[in-house]
Length: 522
Image 1: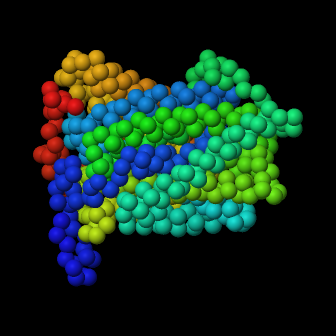
Image 2 (image 1 turned 30 degrees about the vertical axis):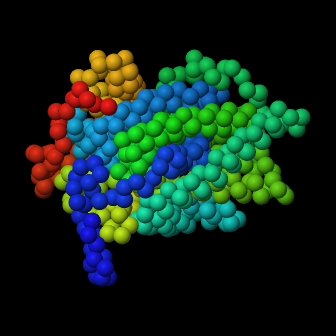
């Protein structure tokens, strides 16, 4: 890409040079396998996800929380293989947007892209909130941590800072991810080992319970509704590994490395979550008071109180407790940053394909990163965060639950797109049948089931979550369903607007919409 040496020329970011994979003007070859895995893991934010979600899972399923985290891994691994197979044929940073368009047509592809965007925008509210809370607690300002106004201000500042980091370069982002992730994993392992040692020691807390085989027995889960709600919450803690694939056009060996990173990331997450959930239950139990993981007052943030109980508050233990708070803060920082990455690249890809306004297809001439797509993600996240904080009594719980619907939607769509795209080569070999057909299809069906059951049964109950809305012709409906389904319906409306204003993508999409996996597909 030609770049002028004078200052004024640099002030206007040029449009992407093409719409195909590797043709958009992004910085190619900037990431390797290790950096891709780090981005995939950091995007899930293990510490933040556990802090915000483990309590919700335990409130629903009790001591069976470990098996729920294990079972949630299965559809995630299945969809990770769908990403791996589709990326091998088309390493486009639009991922689900372009893949679903190839398989099912431009309208389905557009909604797939919207699913990514809306899920990321919703979760930014959680990330910003927890970053604000932990930031104040880290420096001992607990009164500000309990203030909605101050945590909201801190959250907005946090989004601005992370957006700026994403704007100035993918390599800087990846380097920061490696350092933040290292701190995070070390502290989670230290917390888990210390909790297990104390739970089995002579001075074990009254809440302690020895690990039992029943914790890994899914048939001991109280009800189907509890299982579904727990699974969707657990799916949330795995969500994010696909960021490793969304930066595929900036990765060395773009057809292989991102897919491998996605699969490896999900397996590593399984190990982390199983260890932490089991050790936390062994130490704190499922009690509804104090540090008990069943205490609904702590359901949105279980690690804060757990850290003080495990490490203590004086001496070196106090230092570790502060370090744990810092770790959750860095986890939220890492995830904020890596949540911006896939959304910016999805909208960027959509712009290069003329599916959204062309301004989102601009690339920074020096940093070689999407400009308005990155800035737009930051602005949309701030707007949604402020809005959700104003209308919801529990911004963490309701938005986490609603984002599960968005995740299930676009992950499931990717699974189905993989099967349909490769449908003509599924009989070529057993490997093709399993990894291009059976595994993605099973993952898609599982997520479709959980989406429907949760959206129209569990989450629709007015008593579920902390908000409810009286809808015309429907009546009182749980706020979680309204937020999740409403966000997807909004996408359909925006798609119709885009179709009317600039409909070239819908009339003449620049991807083959009838591709079915050529005989020489990888």
